[in-house]
Image (tube, rainbow, N blue to C red; front, side):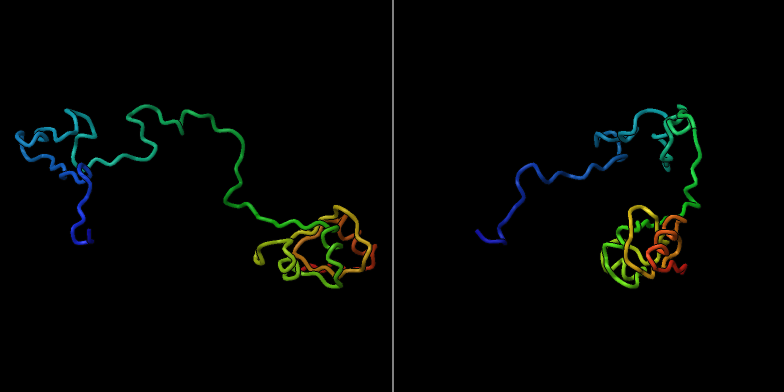
Length: 146
């Protein structure tokens, strides 16, 4: 057997259904679209949420709460104890990325005061909580806003 003699398995290749070519074809008159309604018309396009005139699910469900999605600010959070674990003199966004603590350089970084710090570190970040500033300065370090 060689590649030139290969044929598809029996029953896998079907003739294309040619609709609307007269009654003798078996797909004439309504061309397989049923007798009436919007879907039987040419050029019919359905909207994603359209349910045939029934009130769509989107409108039936109650709307509750508030969504601030378009104005939401993504913030990467780093706790003071993670910075203490690095045991470095200066910590900034690039240092945090290199050590795998945060993932994105362009996103806002906020330092929070969870945990304890006992080494003097100069921390540069976009935001600090008041407890984080207090703990960093108490250990002899500096909190610098970038």
